[in-house]
Length: 124
Image (cartoon, one colour):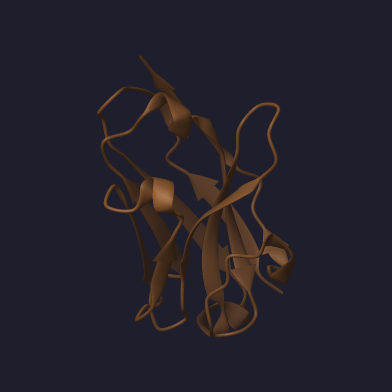
């Protein structure tokens, strides 16, 4: 079992930065690949970023490459999403997810554990 709690969302201006955090509990965390997904109003949830259990492999959706960075600290059971140069289209509820396999995935259905989400609003 893995429990996930996101934090760090908020209201920011275009071009600002935010760092989202995901606190994980449960002994399985160190064996999990992790992902960040987001859901904007009226849209389906979409993949944002993923990181392998070791942190050695990451992958991003094209729209955030070069602006967002996913990282993890297994000693602290934490996963982060550093978001720079934020745009209005980044406005969404951001979810942390855990996959009880070591390798990354962009597919929502391959993640078995989800947090409750944290809202990010980018104002122009």
